[in-house]
Amino acid sequence: MRVDQLDRREPLITNQDRRILVTGATGYVGGRLVPRLLEEGFTVRCLVRTPAKLDAAIWRERVEIITGSLSGPLEAAMEGVDTAFYLVHGIGDGADWINQEIRDARAFRLAAETAGVSRIIYLGGMGRDDASLSPHLASRHAVGRELAAGTIPVAELRAAVIIGSGSASFEMLRYLVEVLPIMVTPRWVATKSQPIAISDVLDYLVAAISTPEPLSGVFEIGGPDIVSYAEMMALYADEAGLARRRLLPVPVLTPRLSSHWVGLVTPVPASLARPLVDSLVNEVVVTDDRTRRLLGEPQRTLREAIRLALGRTQSGEVPTSFTDADFQPFRSYATDPSWAGGTELRDVRTMSTAAPIGNVFSAVSALGGETGWHAGEWLWRVRGWIDSLWGGPGLRRGRRDPTTLHVGDFVDFWRVEAVSEPTLVVLHAEMVLPGEAWLEWHLEESHGSTRVTQIARFKPRGLWGRLYWLGAMPFHRFVFPGLLAGIVTDAEANRL
Image 1 (cartoon, rainbow, N blue to C red):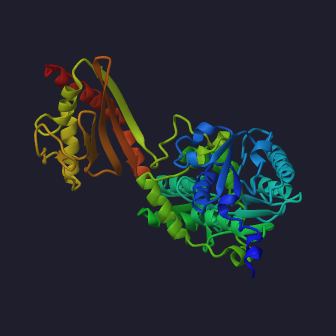
Image 2: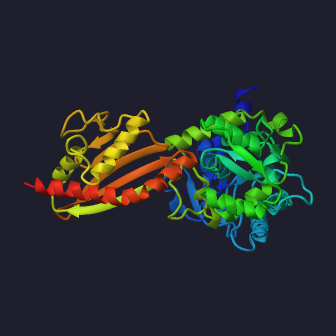
Image 3: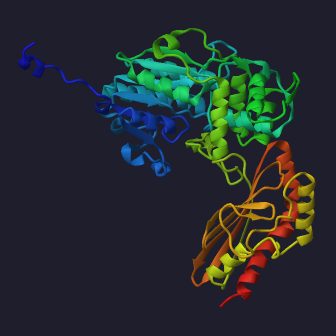
């Protein structure tokens, strides 16, 4: 071939040349898909209603942000787009949410056609199209049909239960198993499903964008395991190191009653739990091998997916949560737990003093040992005696140095986890507990005074952990205010 012929060849299109539109980038799946696309070298644009929700994302400066919603206008969002991801779901967002979903899908399709988008990839829900399909799954399928009603090839990936740290399905599973050693269960716990790891969902989404020719039609995506919800709960309990849960099936627990039960026991609100439970009534398993032939095999078993999600939850490494989404059922409230690391119960006290911050830090650093804990000393001694009886360190250890703290030092039945003079001290409990506990102090100077914030944190393990915290609350109301007041009194007495 001559050189002049080589020069006239069409340039190869690289991933960087392809602009990808992601809707739902502030949601659970979208927030994890965007960094994956960036890793693959794609140019990414995000359509979001609240751009400020992406400020904390480490990839924020690497994407283009368009402020808007699916109701339009969508011209700016679609301009120059090669592939558009439809990852938005209005589940329970208003009384007319099902019809609104279809209207949004139609507006999205028409705008994409006008802009010349080459393919649409939609993440929907698995289930057979028959009369038994839940309203939630029926709406998912209706959106898929609306997106596919035009001229653009649409790959509709239908997933069952998605297992990943922070997903609504995983959080519901986690709380039900951890909180309730004995469960009165409805019939849907015996329904078969094919759960899939969030990492495999992302792999399939990226694979769908990378095929030489646009994919079209329905692609059911599931993991390698077909299990009942009861089996899923047993597997979670095993991975979490919990005793096997006892299930007492009853035929009268309707999806409506189940959703209120889930809303009471877990942080998943009943308005969101209802469509999730409705979906569990339907068997959701992969019915053909089309996805595996064209997009590959799933990489994680259910056990591996649970293990990874549980590990990330416990370590606080949760990239996205179902509470991140804009829609009303997904919004977090003041009464919700800290999602960074699972349920966290807190007792927070603050006090200001004229004592210098250094004196307050010294007073905190002298706690335990001969100094004691200022208030309710007899309660501390009883707790230490009980801890010793149960095999814990109790109060006998005292402390290594009477006035200074270093990371790793023991302080009675606490261990120093963090020290940053003169602003922070964190103690981690080594007493025998049905959970993990911390006691910490944050100090800051403000207008000639020192503000002290004392936080007792507890991450309960199972039902006994929650009962322990509830049983200890009356003593907390006496012990913790007195502890903080004693610190301030010592600091002021040593004031220079």
